[in-house]
Length: 318
Image 1 (cartoon, rainbow, N blue to C red):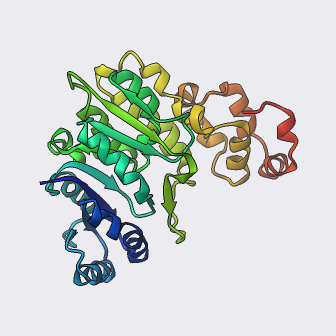
Image 2: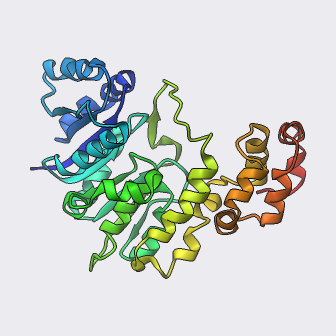
């Protein structure tokens, strides 16, 4: 059994997988880390990319293709389930295909694995340094936003492999994996977790631009579904639950004045969307609802002018 396996979830992105493998295939071989690729593609391009590398002697790459007869949603659930259950490794690192963590960080990750940490999160935004935790609540408060990035979290396989990802996604599709992570570590007696912060030098992002749809569903995902995600967390997080609702806004400024003006100017946010989500926005957005409402009713052209004029810098620096 290997210490660590990287599980890639991909769909019709052979170019991304080729790019990812070009970066990590040799370093993972040298560090004895296996690579598993779970593909839901409607063609054989990704499989051909993998075969090229295997034929070059990279036998630590394992390829799986999900059943083409199932729906896209079921296919994704299959791949996620296999990604946690199939690898013959102590730790599983679930990744998307849009970015990879720089291989120079593997040694540090493996050092924490060697110390038997339950969960290791590595993040690309400045978080004021790497932090180690023996308190579950403190870890969750600090790591709740980092773990939303697919590719940021390494977890002990024995903790996660029994969880039903399909059920978690039915409860909350955008954050089903993250819900499973936090449930998996909720009842550990002597919890140990670490968040590794390497700032802008953490990852290599794909040069290929593939629309994800995240911009158009910003309010659906990060207001309504985020609220429900926090509500679904087990009682182990009760002491910090109230402080988790607005963590994305506090850490990343998702709903700052500037961002709301941008969203309004691009039509991602309007009065209808605000009214649909206002009960969630009270907790998820740091800014008072009355100010959010005022931006929601702005004509798009005015919002666009305010966003681009620089006048916003005169006001609140949120």
